[in-house]
Amino acid sequence: MIHPQIEKLIIVQVKDLFFQKLQQELERIPNERAKIERLIEEEKASIELAKSELNSKEVERNDLDSQIKGKESDTAKFKTQQLEVKKNEEYRALTHQIEQAQNDISELEEKEIAIMYSIDEAKVSFEKAKSDIDERIARQNEQLSQLEERLKQLKEEIGSAEGVYTESREAVEAEALEIYDRTKAQTKRPPYIASIEVQNCAGCHLRVSNDVLGLAISGEEIITCDQCARIVYKT
Image (cartoon, rainbow, N blue to C red):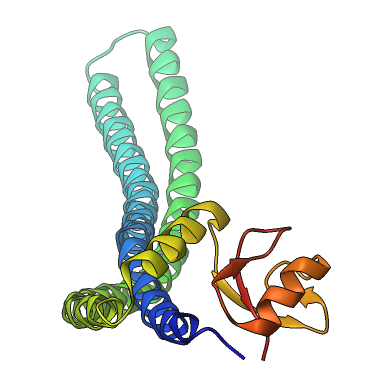
C-alpha cells in the first residue's frame, strides 16, 4: 500500500511540475524575444546594405555623367580655340585633343549605358528583396506581439498555479514536505516521486535494494531510492 502522505505528495508534485513548466516558459520568452529582435535588425541591415550598393551605382553613374559633360566642354573649348589659332601645328594638336576627348566620351558613354542597365537590374532585385524582407519583418513583429500576449497570460497563469501549488502543500504534513523538498534539491530534475516497477525505480531505472522494496510494499513510512534518492512507492 502507498503511504497516505505520498499520495498527497504526488498531488504536490503534479502542481509543482506544472508551476515549474510555466516558470521555464516565462524565462525563455526574453531569449526568444531577443532572438526575433536580432533577426529583425539583421533583415533591416540587409535592406540598408542593398540600398547602399544601389546608391553606389547611382553615384558611379553620376560621376560618369559628370566626366562626359567635362569632356564635351573640353571639346567645345578646343573647337573654339581652333578658330583662333594661326599655325597648322597648333590646329592639328587641337584636332588631336578633340578626337581624344570624343573617344573618351564614347568610352564613358558605353560605361554609363552598362551601369544604367546594372542599376535597372539592381532596382528590380532590390524591390523584390525588400518586399520579401518586409514580409518577414512583418511576421517577426507578429511573433513579438504574440510573445508579449503570451507573457501577459503566463504571468496570470503563474500566479494561479503558484497558489494551487501552495495550497496542495498545505494538505501535507511538515515532515513529509521536508522530505519532498530535500529530494527535489538532491535529484535536480523530476520526477521527485517514482513508483517501483517490479524492483526497479521508475525514476532512475535502477534496481532498489530488498530493504527499500520491503519498506515500499509495507507503506508504513516515506522511503527513498537507494540509487537516486527519489521518493519511491509500490502499488
